[in-house]
Length: 420
Length: 162
Image 1 (cartoon, chains in turn brown, cyan):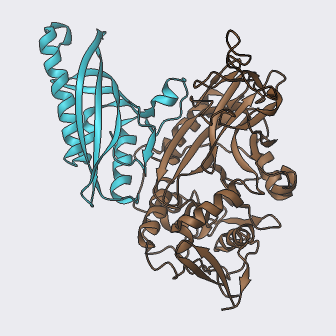
Image 2 (tube, rainbow over the protein chains, first blue to last red):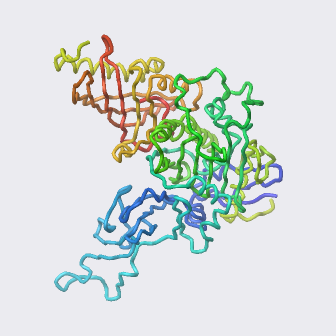
Image 3 (cartoon, rainbow over the protein chains, first blue to last red):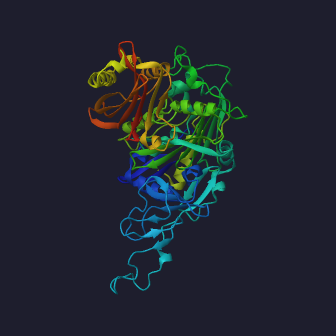
């Protein structure tokens, strides 16, 4: 059986079978599919991650960011509430907020100085009643009808999410119990932001969504993981999804494979000769009683929450057309970290981000796929490790969560099943 | 080399020569020699202006020993996966800000252009170096080198030092 998907150049067959997952390459490159994704995914019935509560702690704080490619503003109002609005003046459509972050009394559009409060309500229109009896807004002009477009907003742990949808279930129901419990595990006490890193990846955003749901690649692409035992597929761990298979949590526990490196002999990424002159890079501290040392948690469509050794970070995907996306890394620690722990986090920061000894390679993996799939749009990938089904696993030799992502993606994009 | 016996022009000459040799070493891909520009207990950091201006510590690269610099290069040569590329540094506005207790504080502007195998050269990273330089026998070395970059949207990834 095949599924048909509309593209710029006509239709594309999406092969479905029981043995493995397949994704036609056109899904990553097509402009029409990207447009539909903006409406049905990023502006549709899903919750997008937009920031950490610690980024806007005080009344008047704001942050400008994006959901997909739609510019939005996140604010903390006088009452301490969090608000999310489209970053677009209700008058003539200009950006209201032109700084990345800051603290202000009110939002003001520079074009005609329309003013909004921190909840997006219109509070000021210059020359509203005209000047000297001339001009002015029409009789029927009502301030309350011209506020900024507001979004639904909610938090879990220290993470802020927003949605354009009136229909989507509550955030907790959307994430599901397993994902919520893992977010709350990491968000167990107040955090402080350690800084942002930004990476422009020249590939489709869904290639990164696949990458972060894929424990199969982690020990084969990243030598640091394998050689130093930060992650190996022989470790205790697994891959779990929510009921709709859209979100994933991958966990692994260092030191649970008793140094067994079965299967890794002869592989590029296992090199016992490779040692560090200054091993302080990897001298960490046990942080969680459950012994889990690696968590890669993804929520559909745009978040990764990670714990790799003692590094904690969120990664937000901002789409910039079908062929590139920005990955915003925000590292954090806990407010009560002692000096030693602060030093550990700063030093292990070398492992992650665009220059991360581990994570730099994921950007490269995305780019080499995107470059190779630019033609032959009807051909497809083969995703079969672990049995080719979207099932939870108690091991790490699997691509099951990648298949789960694509099942939910097809449902969200309303790609109807058809027979070829 | 006794720094306080040098004239201002002599000091400037030595500092400029160190900076020139440093970027030449990277641009010519002699990265195994790159750690030798630093003292044993050095600090080398590449951090965005976005974080630096907010006093936030998150750096792209943060090393606090020469050993960590050597590990970065061994990792670049043997472990990491990235596209082939070359750098071309352009240095300007080298300013000696201070000389105190044998430490020269120097600031300079840099531009790194990157060329990949497709032959296209693009501006990859622009920023300033904030350095602390000391004499080690007859040569100057970096006790601290902080590259604060304006280009906070890093194209693809960062593996080669700046």
